[in-house]
Image 1 (cartoon, rainbow, N blue to C red):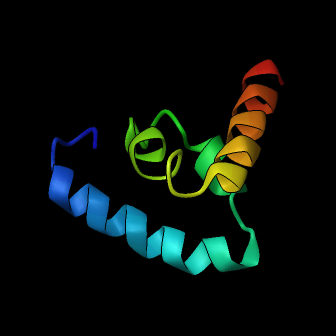
Image 2: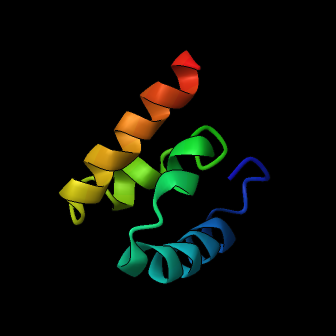
Length: 65
């Protein structure tokens, strides 16, 4: 996203999400939240509310730590 290559970023984001999400491996999305810009909020919040809640907890923990 930082490189303004939005479509490439979305594609890479979903490739990573589709690999990680079935196994519950969502921590990486919380740790790298700032680098992902609004991709987490835009695509995960609505369709994956349980995982989104976990990610937001990780973001808070990461920012506090």
